[in-house]
Length: 202
Image (cartoon, rainbow, N blue to C red; front, top):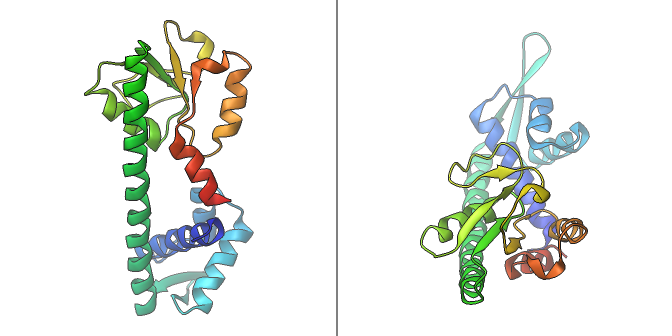
């Protein structure tokens, strides 16, 4: 499955899930929740309707209610299973990759690590660190929900770290380039799982 197909499936699943949770949901509210243009949301709604996954009923005050058809429920179930399958595959690959990196850091006597971003990758790294002998100095970011690791907005405010581990899952290359401007390149590690993920998208 290429990146466009994966994105289409994820967007379709988001629309179907939103309709399933609330038949009176609006396209504008979904647009805001997903952070995409209203026109794009409308396009996905139209595709779901054209495929017979969603039905529209007009309700008072010129508003609409959306309902999943039996076909829509079946498609939502299929896409949800596919989503979890993809997520599990990423988690397994990421866990192996990060475990190897953390073990290598320990062998090289690089005990103190900063994570570049809050993401599912930083959560996996945090879990692995709990059973390792390395120390997570903190995460670069704002308002973290991760209470076990400090969060600081600027890398320059961290002290006593040996390595910065890239955990940006959206655009790791831009994150790497930005960090290279303020810290030495040999202090930055990009996990192979991110490079693999980028290849899948291309």
